[in-house]
Structures are given as C-alpha cells and as structure tokens.
Length: 337
Image (tube, rainbow, N blue to C red):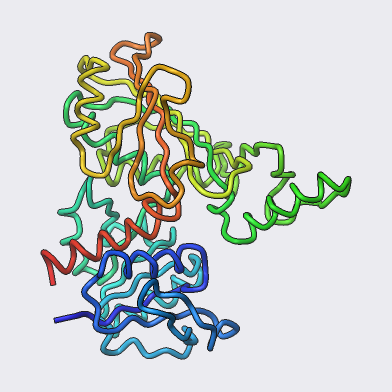
C-alpha cells in the first residue's frame, strides 16, 4: 500500500529538495501534494522524473486522508499548520525550529537515535534537527559510543542557502555588484556577505550566544546525550550550498586517530576523506548534491587530555534538512505504521 504525502513549503529551497529526494528514493507514495502560501497556488513544482505538481494553498488545504506531512514552511507557519495536520490524522515530520525542544516531540537523526521515532504518538509530530546539528551528531555518534564524549567545541562555516533563497540571492547580487563597482546594502544579512564572513546567525541571546549556537547545544544534548558539554560559534560564509564545521572533541577515554577513522568509516551515512596531502580533504563545493556526511582532517588535539579534531562537511539542503526528513519517513513506514 502506498501513502498519501503532503510537502509543506514546497516552493522553498528545502521543500523543493524534499520533493526531489522523495522521487529519487522512490518513496512508497500513491499521491504527493505540494503545499505553499496562497501566492504560490497554481505554480508548477518539479517532482523529479515524475513530472510536476500543481502547488496548492496551504491555508485552505484539508489534511484529512493525508498519511505523512513533510513540513518546512518557517517556524510561525509550522506552529499553526503542523498541529492542524496532526489533528487530521497525519504524522508530521517538521523541519522548522518550533517543535524541536518540545519534550513530547522526538528530535531525530535516523543514524543516531532512530528508536526515538516511536515517541511520535504523543503529538503525531517528529522534529527534524537544525542542519548544523545533524551533520555533527552523525559524526559524533560512533565516537561517543567508543570513548564517551565529555565536551565539544565547534565553529561552523554555514552557507547562504541556510538563510533561504533570499540569502543566496544576496550573495549573488553583492558579488556581481562588486565587479561593476556598485554597492548593494545588506538586506537579508546584518553585514555584507560577499567576500566576507559574519559571526552571527539568528537572534542574539542574553548570554551573548546566538540562537543558532544555542540550537547546536540543546539539540546535541537531546539527540545524543544530555551530559555532553557543547560550545558553538556559528558563522555565515559566502558559499551557496554546504555547511562545514571544525570540531574539537574531549573524550573521557583515550581514542587513537586510526581508531577514530575506522569507527567513522563504518558508520552509515559517513564518508571519510582524509589524506594528508594537498586536496586530501573535502570542501562544501565538491559535495553539493550528495547525501553523505564527509569527515576529513582527523587528528589528535594535544591541548586537552583525550582530544581529537575533525573537519565535517555536508550538503545542508539534503542531509541537513530534506534527506534527513525523508529518512525519518522511511524508517517510520518501515517500522512503526
């Protein structure tokens, strides 16, 4: 039996990717519905080799009879519409930040904590973590199981697609204006993004951290282990797709570099590319459109006892958002519904 699936936010970067991945992976759907705001109603959206879907108005859509909803419309829209879909009987996999820290909503990365999916019955909602958290916890999982992580310090290098189409457009337009000696003031970002880096993603909080940094802390604890201490600095960089992270880990037990590489390479979803030579590592540009979490620059950190450093890269629109949601849906229909 196939499922009836709705994709909410179908015209956005992540929504379009969700549709593409559903088609690529031949998800067992008898029907797929594309939903977005009223201004997008009637627009044709690509559904891979299956052709196109006609976008429908989310506000007017009746979710009765829909089995699964993959939702990425923004937190405020999701706060209203994900519970509405859940009340109609659908199971919602929500990509926004709104439900992630709700104690009655499981926060899931299938390679890391798939059994948590069983908790969906409390609200009929499953939360997809933040993009930067997803790729980090996939890499941390096998290392934590082997040597118990005590502390993580991470600096992220996050692409403009993490801020949506407006962020990508601002990078493109500012870059073009530079070469014709024009100036475009920032609108989406707080400072120029072209030829620059901005240590500010989301709102500032009382302790001086940003909300993006807070998300990495609390989500890692909820997904992996509440005892792990995490400190994050999240930076927007002038790339279009793909997030990178420099991660320093302190373990309770010793873990040799070679053992870490072996454990990482054996973990589903991870590809280790780590040659100590020019180009023997992975960058965001070359992994765009790929599904894996890539790990390079594995080396010891001699500044702490039992320390290790990693470079982690992943496509934030795929594994960091759409692919993770589809993988949750696949595990859900395989094991729970």
